[in-house]
Image 1 (cartoon, one colour):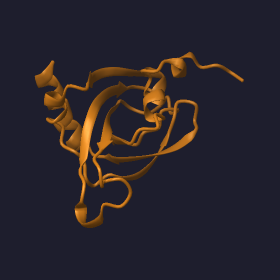
Image 2: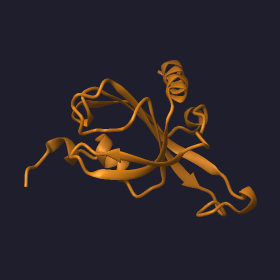
Image 3: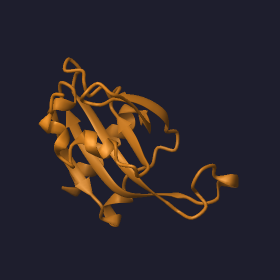
Image 4: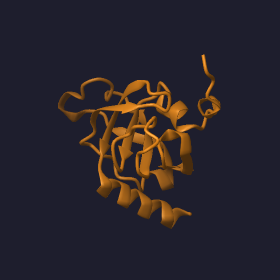
Length: 138
Protein backbone atom coordinates (compact mmCIF):
# COMPACT_ATOMS: atom_id res chain seq x y z
CA UNK A 1 0.00 0.00 0.00
CA UNK A 2 1.34 3.37 -0.91
CA UNK A 3 0.75 6.15 1.56
CA UNK A 4 -0.32 9.51 0.24
CA UNK A 5 0.49 12.21 2.77
CA UNK A 6 -2.00 14.61 1.18
CA UNK A 7 -4.91 12.52 2.40
CA UNK A 8 -3.75 12.29 6.03
CA UNK A 9 -4.54 15.95 6.64
CA UNK A 10 -8.00 16.47 8.16
CA UNK A 11 -8.28 19.73 6.24
CA UNK A 12 -7.57 18.10 2.88
CA UNK A 13 -10.36 18.24 0.34
CA UNK A 14 -10.54 14.42 0.34
CA UNK A 15 -11.00 14.31 4.14
CA UNK A 16 -13.73 16.98 4.07
CA UNK A 17 -15.57 15.32 1.17
CA UNK A 18 -15.63 12.02 3.09
CA UNK A 19 -16.97 13.45 6.37
CA UNK A 20 -20.22 11.70 7.33
CA UNK A 21 -22.08 15.02 7.70
CA UNK A 22 -24.39 16.04 4.83
CA UNK A 23 -22.80 18.45 2.46
CA UNK A 24 -23.42 20.19 -0.84
CA UNK A 25 -20.55 20.40 -3.31
CA UNK A 26 -20.55 23.26 -5.81
CA UNK A 27 -17.85 23.11 -8.47
CA UNK A 28 -16.68 25.02 -11.52
CA UNK A 29 -16.28 21.75 -13.43
CA UNK A 30 -16.42 17.99 -12.81
CA UNK A 31 -14.65 16.99 -9.59
CA UNK A 32 -11.91 14.59 -10.72
CA UNK A 33 -9.27 14.95 -8.03
CA UNK A 34 -7.09 12.18 -9.49
CA UNK A 35 -6.81 13.87 -12.92
CA UNK A 36 -3.53 15.77 -12.90
CA UNK A 37 -4.30 17.13 -16.37
CA UNK A 38 -7.53 18.79 -15.28
CA UNK A 39 -7.57 22.54 -15.64
CA UNK A 40 -8.08 24.76 -12.60
CA UNK A 41 -11.24 23.94 -10.67
CA UNK A 42 -12.90 25.98 -7.94
CA UNK A 43 -14.79 23.83 -5.43
CA UNK A 44 -16.96 25.00 -2.54
CA UNK A 45 -18.24 22.58 0.09
CA UNK A 46 -21.27 23.69 2.11
CA UNK A 47 -21.79 21.65 5.27
CA UNK A 48 -25.51 21.11 5.86
CA UNK A 49 -27.15 21.28 9.27
CA UNK A 50 -30.52 19.55 8.99
CA UNK A 51 -33.43 21.00 10.91
CA UNK A 52 -36.04 18.81 12.58
CA UNK A 53 -38.31 17.41 9.89
CA UNK A 54 -35.89 17.84 7.00
CA UNK A 55 -34.13 14.47 7.12
CA UNK A 56 -34.98 12.14 4.29
CA UNK A 57 -37.85 13.25 2.08
CA UNK A 58 -39.19 16.66 2.97
CA UNK A 59 -42.95 16.07 3.12
CA UNK A 60 -44.66 19.16 1.74
CA UNK A 61 -41.38 21.04 2.16
CA UNK A 62 -41.36 20.85 5.95
CA UNK A 63 -38.03 21.53 7.60
CA UNK A 64 -35.25 23.51 5.99
CA UNK A 65 -31.59 23.27 5.17
CA UNK A 66 -29.13 25.48 6.99
CA UNK A 67 -25.50 25.74 6.08
CA UNK A 68 -23.27 25.51 9.15
CA UNK A 69 -19.84 25.86 7.51
CA UNK A 70 -18.37 26.73 4.11
CA UNK A 71 -15.05 25.59 2.65
CA UNK A 72 -13.56 26.92 -0.58
CA UNK A 73 -10.81 25.15 -2.52
CA UNK A 74 -8.82 26.12 -5.57
CA UNK A 75 -7.48 23.06 -7.37
CA UNK A 76 -5.02 22.84 -10.23
CA UNK A 77 -3.88 19.56 -11.72
CA UNK A 78 -6.33 17.47 -9.72
CA UNK A 79 -6.61 17.11 -5.95
CA UNK A 80 -2.90 16.77 -5.37
CA UNK A 81 -2.70 20.54 -5.61
CA UNK A 82 -5.91 21.68 -3.92
CA UNK A 83 -5.42 24.67 -1.70
CA UNK A 84 -8.00 25.69 0.87
CA UNK A 85 -8.68 29.34 0.10
CA UNK A 86 -11.69 29.94 2.34
CA UNK A 87 -13.29 28.54 5.49
CA UNK A 88 -15.91 29.96 7.82
CA UNK A 89 -18.50 28.80 10.31
CA UNK A 90 -19.54 32.36 11.23
CA UNK A 91 -23.35 32.42 10.72
CA UNK A 92 -23.29 36.02 9.45
CA UNK A 93 -20.82 35.03 6.72
CA UNK A 94 -22.32 31.62 5.96
CA UNK A 95 -25.76 33.11 5.28
CA UNK A 96 -24.32 35.13 2.37
CA UNK A 97 -23.84 31.91 0.36
CA UNK A 98 -26.84 30.94 -1.77
CA UNK A 99 -27.89 27.30 -1.34
CA UNK A 100 -28.09 25.37 -4.62
CA UNK A 101 -31.49 23.71 -4.24
CA UNK A 102 -31.00 22.05 -7.63
CA UNK A 103 -28.15 19.87 -6.29
CA UNK A 104 -28.33 16.20 -7.28
CA UNK A 105 -26.32 13.05 -6.67
CA UNK A 106 -22.95 13.76 -8.28
CA UNK A 107 -20.19 11.25 -9.07
CA UNK A 108 -16.72 12.51 -8.21
CA UNK A 109 -13.27 10.94 -7.98
CA UNK A 110 -11.06 11.39 -4.94
CA UNK A 111 -7.30 12.00 -5.20
CA UNK A 112 -6.58 8.25 -5.04
CA UNK A 113 -8.98 7.55 -7.94
CA UNK A 114 -11.71 6.15 -5.69
CA UNK A 115 -15.20 6.96 -7.02
CA UNK A 116 -17.43 8.73 -4.51
CA UNK A 117 -20.97 10.14 -4.63
CA UNK A 118 -21.89 13.49 -3.08
CA UNK A 119 -24.83 15.86 -3.33
CA UNK A 120 -23.76 18.67 -5.57
CA UNK A 121 -23.86 20.66 -8.74
CA UNK A 122 -21.42 21.88 -11.39
CA UNK A 123 -22.37 25.52 -11.84
CA UNK A 124 -19.89 28.24 -12.88
CA UNK A 125 -22.45 30.96 -12.01
CA UNK A 126 -22.68 29.78 -8.38
CA UNK A 127 -18.87 29.69 -8.24
CA UNK A 128 -18.67 33.27 -9.55
CA UNK A 129 -21.20 34.33 -6.90
CA UNK A 130 -19.29 32.50 -4.13
CA UNK A 131 -15.96 34.02 -5.22
CA UNK A 132 -17.56 37.44 -5.08
CA UNK A 133 -18.83 36.74 -1.53
CA UNK A 134 -15.42 35.46 -0.36
CA UNK A 135 -13.54 38.43 -1.80
CA UNK A 136 -15.90 40.79 0.07
CA UNK A 137 -15.44 38.86 3.34
CA UNK A 138 -11.63 38.76 3.37
